[in-house]
Amino acid sequence: MRNFRDLKVWEKAHKLTLDVYAASLGFPDSEKYGLTSQVRRACASIPTNIAEGCGRDSNADFARFLQIALGSASEVDYLLLLLRDLDMLDAAIYQSLNNQTAEVKRMLIGFLQHLRRQNT
Image (cartoon, rainbow, N blue to C red; front, side, top):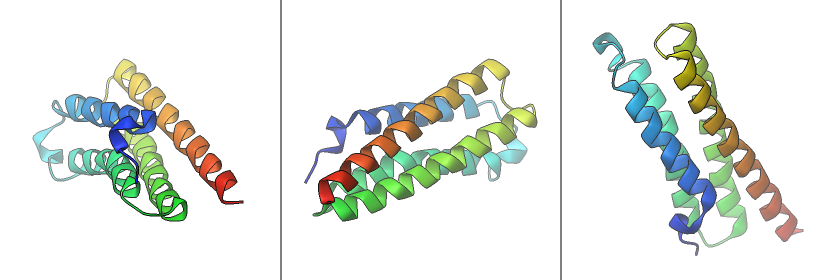
């Protein structure tokens, strides 16, 4: 069993989640149960799935949760683009969050590849 707090990818995903929450504070009230909620839940799903996977017994189970986290990161990637195109996100904030999301995705892919190599 791993400690998720020791993983750099979890740390980066947690920071991204905090930054998305901060950026979404200024979203319109009309989106409270729409895009605001959706982007926050998708983003929080990334470190949550990493943490849950750490509690699993096998690398295969852990990899499955990392794959789910990667899917959530792709969802965040799109939602940030949508928010930018709807003028709900400032271009500079979008760029920063987009860069963080891309880094988390790269790290998740690398971690998945590492786990798969260990299983062969």
